[in-house]
Length: 451
Image 1 (tube, rainbow, N blue to C red):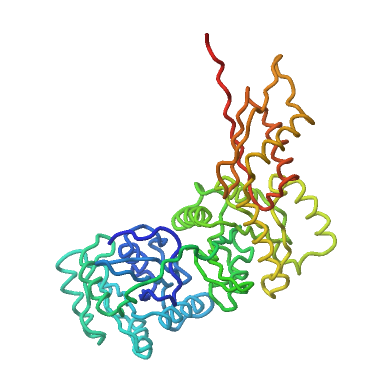
Image 2: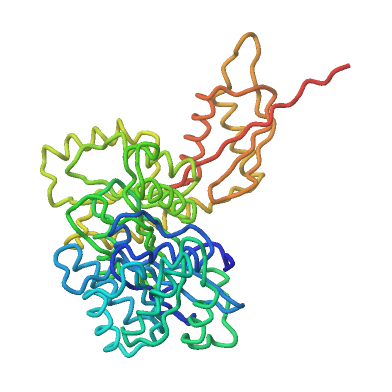
């Protein structure tokens, strides 16, 4: 298995064939998905129920591209949150071209497996049977007992060690339809938006409201989303790629097991996005965790929009204190557009697109060298750098080598104070906008010539 194009997975209903991976909880589906795609992408832990949404990944085998959809453990008799997970698995089967049904060969056929088989037969989709956790010849002999499921030949594999995965993938390709001979490459794909925030602030509810369907499992239990989930959404006559992420907990180092890996996935999702939408619970105080997420977005150089969710729970007193918290706790990102929404009802969710457009415009703003140096000349004349130790650093020249985020290089005669750097950034924003984006300022200090 080889890693394919880096970046976002394809939409589930796209032209590339789709393989849905289903099975009971904890039979090794996510481990097998990682084996198929050739990288550790799906969150894996030896605890049932780690995967909860349907999550898409790019894969290729023998030169053929296809999309793998990992699903939560499928229990046909589930209730509550487990029922939502089962519903997501059922949706994945509906959208797929073929199904990879994973069974734990060391356990054998269970009543739940037989119930899933009945549902798969009704779907009419081709089914490949994977007998997982076959690590030796003895287990391989036991795997052939799965013929009794009536799905044809079971393919003995060890997702953990890779044993038998080649034969399994050959069978997968035989079941999947051929892709179109020529696929138009996306030169400029949909804008990528990461939805980030603490657990249980309403990120998945916001994505579901935007998508107009129950796309992500939502529950009152904090931390329902673990893997980043991609969704193509039509908004404002355009297609956007939204990435729902796991709630970032207090510190990655303090998280354990799948929470640790989910936090790493979230950081990766921010890196992969162009804009991060930070969802805050407006009825709760802005916390240290929220500020840490803001810092992560700034360090990644991504544009930022702040969405205060659950606005229907905010009364006059809370608004008074929230205004002061914003001034105090979010002082570093006063440039970020802020919107107030109620994701549960859809109130003011339509304000997100204009905020995203503003943030992207600021993120990609470029200033011509002439205009930049004219601005710097006026700035220095109005407010020169203070004298330090009998010396006064001067800005001799400035340039903007790149955008996304806007990055400036200042050629100076000496090191500028951090406070003067902040002053330059503030004046840049006043003059040129840069709404919704961090600004990167770097200095190149002229070395003194030696005789």
